[in-house]
Image (cartoon, rainbow, N blue to C red):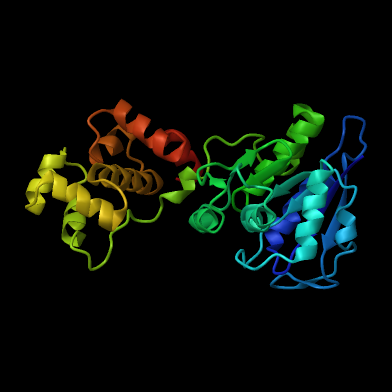
Length: 312
């Protein structure tokens, strides 16, 4: 039987901790036998889990001999990793153990050096911090999970469920994984990645910057067919100066900022109205429904129709 060790670090996030325990415990093989046995492990006798204290039945010795180790997220991803934990995870990796992280659990995994040179993900809100803290890790904030073979990482919260189902499919095939997905009331594969969840906030408008009046004007004129020259003319500066100021103050170009603002407004309209996709595309400044659908899917990872079904 496949053994999964779930490592509860200090300030472990209960949702991330419970996800692999529930999913793997409920997994059954075609003959009814359980597919996994679970070990909940911790470095200390008692672990802070925010709303409660956790007494794990296994210490770090429970990681030895496990087929898979799961590192759930913690409330303090920047906390230093204890040397005993680092050494235990490195030793497991040398032995060929599959190691996976959920949400901010990517941070302690990265602290071991096991992600150096690899692509990885985490919750989108922490992606910039992960990239800045561990520059040798190729951070991809737009996906639900990344499988590097023996090292896997997942995005926030529910993406840990996607990752667990992916591992079940790798271990026992699609039929067993599909049964596990049904028990979890989840699709075996979700379309799109984290990108569909990221753009609910307003496009960046730096308060007090020299661009603030121009950005407010752009936000009010999303439906207008604007060129770079149009924007520069309204700002009363050259296109070269406009591009330079946008780079300095928003980190992007004028047209990229405009596209993002249009997609954000389209998301709002898809959620809050019953307008057709064609009408919404026109309302946010796209010349054709095809152009709108292509840009929306490129930005969010899903079509406007699928986005509406998920969030409308």
